[in-house]
Structure formats: structure tokens, C-alpha cells
Image (cartoon, rainbow over all chains, first blue to last red):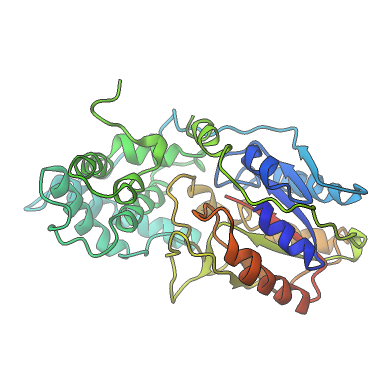
Length: 233
Length: 152
């Protein structure tokens, strides 16, 4: 982003960049940057906290008073992610019938996802499948986890994008299963460590890695910091 | 603490650095027309919708509203729940409107721009030579003076 800021500044636009990884801004040296030690994905701080968002913008625009650059200033407030505290969500009961329990779990979460979509009006599901298509692809990852070859189960697209649709569906459904806006990575940790789908994708990731799938295909199935390998200490 | 590990992994990555840091003398803030340029990989719904391919250095023009925008970034390595709850966490368009209403900034641009960060090609050749200058032209055509850049 620092490089992009310099391109825009060179074209005659004054720029102020919010930084979220300090080392990258130190390397790319944008003209003016405010480093905010906030969770990745939340450069303005906290959702639903307009006062904090405004303090960030005030501090960023104050850098315009500097006579020369590059300028790099640290915002005084720090927010950490809460990956170590997964959301506590009660997963609706579901009848597995003749589908895999992980697929049944996703079917049971569809009403919660629809409620979240109705409430917030936005979704990040849809790279390959829509919400209604998620339960079926959860079933495909469960089959990979149980030993079937990943290229032969009939994934409808790039496995990393299909996995993103599953994760985003679960995280969005979770927003209707809890009262509070979650801290950063709390919904992610719930999905990965508390749900059958997260377990299936984790085990499928390991199976694909062991089967020699390309780095891209297994590495991006889950956040890197959620990878759990059987041989790890 | 996922972000602590991510920062350790990412802060040492190579980046493209200009020999000389460019500098544009800003107009007074209260007279400045402000746009957001984000590397969050935002797209209008429909079309490519929720998908932005790794390595794609394209730029996407955005309207002055978060309604109908999708966070399409390819990387799984950051939180998305904040965006769903409050898009101002990435695209602070409501905060900028409030600042314009209060006279703190001059106005909010009609045109905003998204790129996607986490680029594999650290030289960012396409962004430096093609899509970055194209974004600048689009912003200058809207009489933008000041750009706020937001990452994810």
C-alpha cells in the first residue's frame, strides 16, 4: 500500500495511509502514514465504534500539517485480535439424514446465515457457491478429509475459494448466534475449532498437503495461524 | 493471537521503494475533496462479485456508498466479521460524510477506488505503471485533492 500511496502522490494527490503492518510501511515509505496496531482486517479499529474511527481519521489527517516526509506516526491506542477466545455459539440441531454430519451442520446454519444477511445486508459468500450451495461443498471437504482424492470429489472450483465460501458462511451465520459484535478472529476461531465443517476443512488441508497438492491449494484453505498439523508439537 | 504471528511473518517481506518519496503539498483540509483508496479488494456485487484472484493488480472504481460492496480479497489471513458488521471499519465513508457535514473536510468524492493487497509481485509493476496512474486520473477527474488509503 505504501507503493500505491507514492504513485498517487506522484500524480498530484496528497495521501495519508493507514498502516496495519508497521514493517511493511517502514519498507515502502509512503509520504504520510499513521500506524494503527489494530487487528488485520480492521484498519479503523472496532466495528460500531464511530468515536474511535473518528479519532483515527483525526490523527491521520493531522499528518497533513507535517512540512515534509516521509512521515510515520503511531496511533496511541492498541487493539489485539481475540483468536484465543472463540465465540460461544450454540449450533442449531440438525438431522443428518443420509448426508455427512458436517453437511447437516451447515444445513442447520442456513437460517442463521439468512438472518445475518437480512440484518447486515452484505455477505462475502459467493466466490464459487452461494449460501445455499455451502452445505454440499462442506460434504465434499468431509470426503477429502476421510480419504478421497481432492481432485476427484467434484469440487466446483478452486478449493481455496470454495473453502473461503464455507468459512465466510459460518462466520456470517455466527453473527446471528451471538449477541455481541465479535472481537477480531473470534468467529474464525469458532469456525475452525468448534464446528464439524472447520474440522473437515482442517483435516482435508492436511490430507491434501500429504497427497502432494500444490502449496497454494492447501495453504489458503484456512488462515495460516489456524493450521494444525499432526506432526506439529 | 493470530495477528501477532502474521505480523512477524509479513513485516519483513520485500516491498518496492521509490528512490525519492514524492510529495504533494496538501490543500487546507477544510477545502479538500477526499477519496478512499483501499487495498481490501472491494467490488460491487454482481459480475465478479465476491472473487478477486491472487496476483490481480487491477483497480476497481467504487461508488460513494458501501451498500452493495463485497469484500472479495483472496487472502484468508485477516478478519472479515468486522466488515460485515460495519463497513466503515475498512471503507469509512460514513465518518467522512460526518466530517464533511461538520466542515472539517471540504467534501467527499463521488469516486473511490479499490485494489487488492497481498500481491505476490512485490515490484507492483502493473500498479505502478498502469492501474495506479489510471486510478489517479479517475480521482483527479472527480477533483479529488486528498486520498485516505486503508489496508486490511
